[in-house]
Image (spheres, one colour):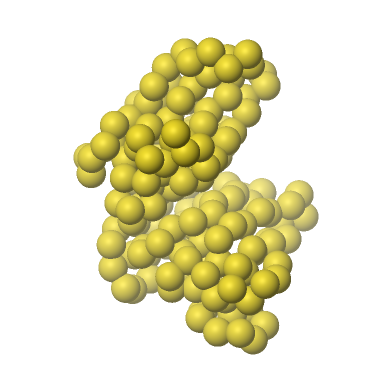
Length: 166
């Protein structure tokens, strides 16, 4: 109905696609046949409310569960491992998680669209630091919506309402 995120595992010929409106992830073969449906609507472990983005990282499938205000980490077969974040207005909390990425030290970066910041978590889900704030100046964001990290650990943030990439 409404795919918003995609991750490709070419080693095992699998594609993972989020369906935001159905609150599911579809695991497909390279021809597009559905092999498995992961998740359902809800707030529990492995359940989703508006999943938008996903990434494969190591043996994990990392999913932005936007309206549950968290990032869920599943194994590649869809079994819940742990979640990062909760609804709130302080650091470590999330209100509109959007883009995610990983640096060379396996730190997870999460863009929060409402708070206008990027939060960085370690492999155990502990907040390490954050950067950015709402605004129009350098290092400030207005509805950041995406994030990418290159091989030199440079961080690129899609800053939607400021109409730029920082």
